[in-house]
Amino acid sequence: MDKQAVTSADIAAAERVLGIAQTRPERDLLAGALAAQIDLARARRAVPLDEQLAPACVFDPRLPGFAPPPAAPLRLPAADAPFPGDDDAAIAFAPARLQAAWVRAGHLTATRLAAICLDRIARLDPAIGAFARLNPAALDEAAELDARAARGDWAGPLHGVPWGCKDLIDTAGLVTDRGAEPFLGRLPEQDAVAVRRLRAAGAVLLGKTTVGALGYGDVWHGGRTRNPWNTDEGASGSSAGSAAAAAAGLCGFALGTETLGSIVAPAARCGAVGLRPSFGRIARTGTMPLCPSLDRLGPLCRDAGDAALILAILNGADPDDPSSLDIPFGGDAGRDPEGLRLGILAADFADPSAEAARAAIEHCRALGVVPVPVELPALPWESLVSLLMAEAAASFEPLTLSGADDLLARQDESAWPNQFRLARFLSAVDHIQLDRLRRRGMMAMRDLLAGVDLLAAPFGVGALPTLAAFTGHPCLCLPVGFTLSPPRPSAGIAADAPADAPARRVPAALCLWGRLFDEAPMLALGHALARRCALDLRPPHGLTGAT
Image (cartoon, rainbow, N blue to C red):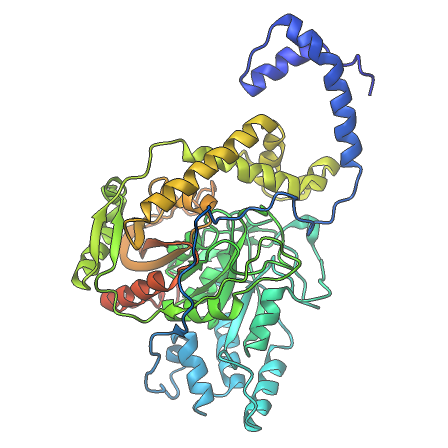
């Protein structure tokens, strides 16, 4: 590029975009240097960078002085109930731990359990759209596990349990196209680390669950994933299919990912239990990189005890993921929560939409939990989202520069193509300052959790969900009640329902946050609270909605 091509007028126009102001002499000085900087940027863009190549600066959520909880064996809540015989629906909606126990006791074969789920998918999924594609080898895998069981060779704690895998987590020989047109037909050669760990534990892969294109929302190249409780609205996302499949009893559990809300949002919408573990707990090797300093994997299921078991199986580092950490996961996930101190942000619970969450706090009191008022410093935490957009734009820069982002079906203001372009107008200086604000947030969360064991807030209210995503803290989202609601938007997309679509009974959720790498107290309270609420979380058999 001609170094004289950048003019003072060009710089003045750029200043308006960046929200800064300079003098004419300052612009004149910049012109030549900017031309050289542009040349360097173009030279860098010509260098291919493998999508799995991590940034040199690796996020670590641990502040100086951090100490993990003392190592302890993991204790899970009990999972015992009479085998329901020919009641396939009761089998399908049972916790994964109970399904595994029935298989181990000889009441149930892995083949029958997989067949029950595949039958439910065939009957119910056309209205939900939770699966992008099925694993043609699922029944063969189940039969092999049954043969192993007959020899007394048990694969692991999930022996025979069918599961769904979010379609941006690689599965060898099974298309993983990330819900996005530019990746149609993408066929991985090897399993992601998380998939290998679940296979080793004996889980049977049913298929790939739908994902909002490139990890955003519930719209993908095959349509829209829907809430099993009201198919007039989307399932939210981006782990849309994983949440919907778990909630509808289409699988024993599903695996999701989260950058900002992609596990907890669809869990809240669909009435599933969603666990976003501490950042670094689960190696992400073989998972689509979106935002390396934010991305996490976690389970979507129907029971907090299942979430604890699956986390124990997935926990651990991998050398190809420099963000992953080898910190043991243990503790008593089935303990009585009496005496736990629960931090409450009063303003969040005052929201009119928080009725079920307020009732859940009263249930916590009845369990002996001590609510403690806390306050989050009033800083512009939502501005941190610009960091997310910058990382995502870097991950998918080739789409933007080549114009292949035009292939994505969704092209509105909040969709990825526009957000990728927008991120290029975030200055490097602003990016660094946002990163420093992020550290302020890490310090604020450390201070909040110094006086309490856990934090709680209604789903989707206040700044805590955003801040905790950037600080790396774990979150558990679980249904605690129901509410009547007309079809709702998700991820900036309106519900595509008739104007006169009725309000329907849908789940309402509470979110819990714990200390870094100390998920057990959060899971224990989640389990006890679910038992206290005693909700019937089976969506209507015929499903509802006009779509």
